[in-house]
Image (cartoon, rainbow, N blue to C red; front, top):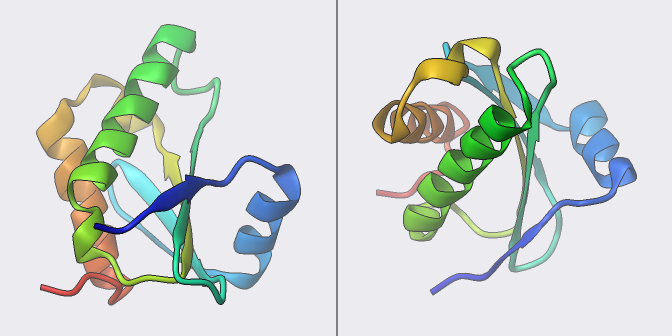
Length: 112
């Protein structure tokens, strides 16, 4: 089982934004940058444009849970930043999970 940390500091997010690659789909945007360690670090960003704090935290929990359940599929040594789009406001777990796995596939960081 792999171990993931959270990206918390603004400078870490900015590093991934400025130096990483990004792909997007209908619900999420994913930036990925190699971090040179054995662990993945994931950061989740949900803007106030998406909704109030209850909605933003709900989306954050959906993304974090879908990553946690599929963590073993992701390659090691990555900084991952997931940004929720406004369209993610009214969707359920399955849609978020599907969007996350789709973006992982586009980045070629998912091993089957």
